[in-house]
Image 1 (spheres, rainbow, N blue to C red):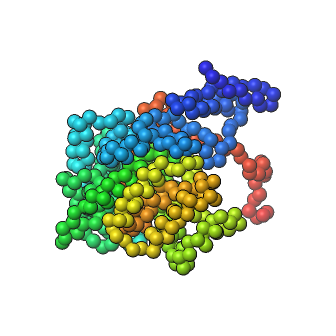
Image 2: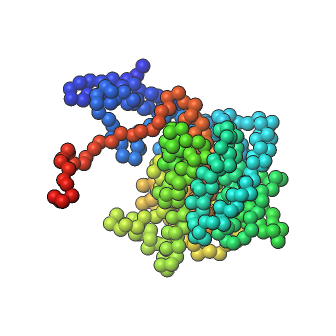
Image 3: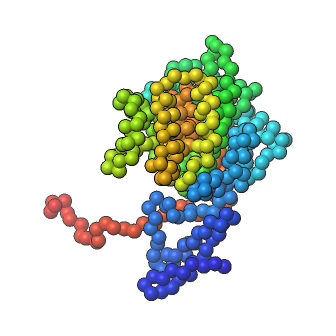
Length: 421
């Protein structure tokens, strides 16, 4: 067995080395504290592996993303359905035609929410963010299905999340809820429930269905990010699936995580409202003394072109062409994109447009409001969260997550009575 040697206070300690299937190397520090009394310090856990996982592989240096070994480019080009990819992530294998048909049937059957849940929507304040509604409603499913098995609840949360999201949107604009249609696909149902109206005929545009399908697939998993780690941490306590996924939704809500595509649009709006001089903002971004940062460029993991962004760039062009939009916001976005792809400053620093840049543009062009962007992200990410929840529960090495700390507060001191302070 490969080992790493650690020297602390003159004493040498051996620690096991774990090597993954893609030759990723990890030093197992499970016994570090018992051997040495010391712990590791790693703010943000950027250099800490919390688990061994067989779900997703990322090579940020070379722009590689694979689900269960399948390259994301091949998945996108295959016209795989979102449910098909969800099945792959959750169960580890591509479904047979029979399994796919049965899974789709069950997904349709469980897509309706309990009629009593509609009362919840009516009692949220009018300005409630849709992510707050989604998190609360998913958590409340435990009240309606307290005895469900994990496998049945997986179907329920996958099927009902899209209905809850669409209802949250309809509530925000004062329109009646639209029930799921069994003859429509998972993706088409999302669009139909959001944009159709009982008094009008609505046919889901194929280009929009294709674009949303890709958006959700490309967001389906991204290994141990903030929200996925939250799901694993909450699940490690023995919490049920619904509350665990609800916690993941809350983590995703943060602007540094799932809210990044919303920040792209807000940045474009700021540039537009300031006269639309995008070149001036490019110069501000280059000035290290200026606090302004271009949102949607570069990535914490990918030090190359985000492979998901390459796929979405074509879809963005298709959606903009279909919608025929004359929007100064989107014009600014296209100009920023062109500069970032050709300017030496951005190329040398590998600050390419990322998935958040293109997803924000596509959602904007589709007519999805900004406050729903993160909800759409959550719909895509739920299969990945479920996959990690199942993997975590099945792993014999799983134990309740309990990080350590190094205390840096005051040393012991005597308590001062109130009258003496």
